[in-house]
Every structure is written in C-alpha cells, then in structure tokens.
Image 1 (tube, rainbow, N blue to C red):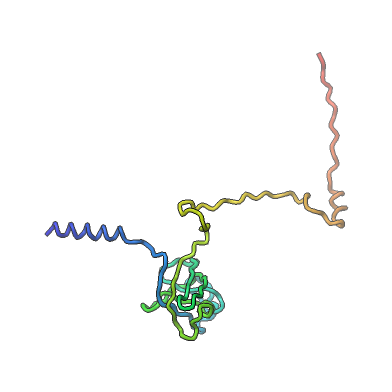
Image 2 (cartoon, rainbow, N blue to C red):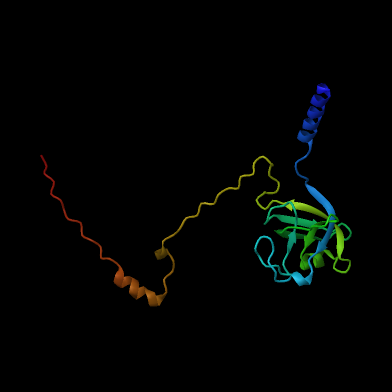
Length: 174
C-alpha cells in the first residue's frame, strides 16, 4: 500500500514538473464591454473609455500588452490589460468597444480569438538569452553653446566676468 502511494506521488511530481508553465498563444472566445461601463473605474483604478484599446483578463498582470487576432478575417489589435475578468467560463477575454470594432465582431457580440503576449523590451532577431537593453549615455552641453538671440546678447556681455591678469612671479636663478 505504501509503495502504491510512493509511486503515485512520484508520478504526480513528474507530471507537475514537465508541464509547460505558460502558453505562448491562447485561444478562446472574446466579448466586449457594454456602453453602460463607459466612465466607470476598472480594477487598476483607471476609468474605462470605450474608444481606448484596453481589455480585461484573469491571469495577465495590469499593463501587459496583448495582441488579439481574429482568425476569421485576419484582423489584429494590440490591447493593454486594465481590468480583471471575464467571470464567465465561456469567455477568455473582454475587450473595449474600440478593440472589438477593429476586430470586426460588434454585431455578433463575441468572437473566437487568438491571444499572444507582447514583450515590449524584446528586440527582434536577437537571441532569447541576451535580453539586456543597452543603456543610453547622454551628454549635456552648456547653455552658452546654444545660439543666443540678439536681444539677450547685451545682457550676457554685461554679466561676463573680466579676465584676470596673471602676476609675474620672480624666480631666483642660482
């Protein structure tokens, strides 16, 4: 009996380790927000606007960019996760009305979609193991190097310090 429990635990452990932690592409049905929600606060604190490209998803963190594609007509749109939902088992994502209009399913009310996460910091055609983005080193120039208008030239000349004279030093020669 103990041997069966041991093998069952080992089997569960192996199955749990070998599963893929996240899918690259998710498919399912999408719906869109009603006009009644226009102006109300979403889960992240922002107000919903029906012309914005936003969506609601249960798992992705707020601010995540998702590419949503309608496989029936090939149209796709990029939306940002700003809310939680949908709370129906039939739907995977809730889109704003503008995103639904772009995908072409306003009349039907729902649509089968493919969802892909977008990584904005990922550089295309670069190996996956090197994800560091180079830092920019900016140099600042003095304001004197910029062209000065003629009406400011007199003011700058008045404030310009006079050059100091260097005193001659006597050096003893031995």
